[in-house]
Amino acid sequence: MQGTSRSSFQPVEAGAVLAGTMGVCGGVGTLAGWAAGNTGYGALAGVVVGLPAGVFAVYRRFKGYFS
Image 1: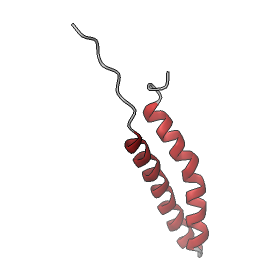
Image 2 (image 1 turned 30 degrees about the horizontal axis):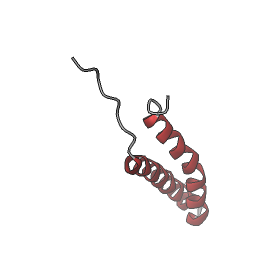
Image 3 (image 1 turned 90 degrees about the vertical axis):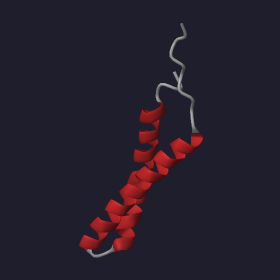
Image 4 (image 1 turned 90 degrees about the horizontal axis):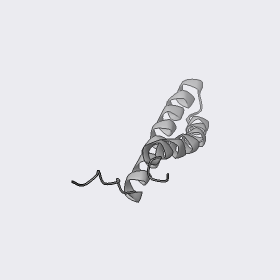
């Protein structure tokens, strides 16, 4: 009887999670900036918030791999 195999780390999936999270945050920031009157600053703020959010999302997704 074999134990459950450990899931492998997949860099493509980690990159997709990071890019997707940054894209969603950038889109929300753009919408907020559009409502406030400046889409460029809104998009910039969304991406600035999206980078740490994306890193956290990748960490949460793959936290069992590194321990």
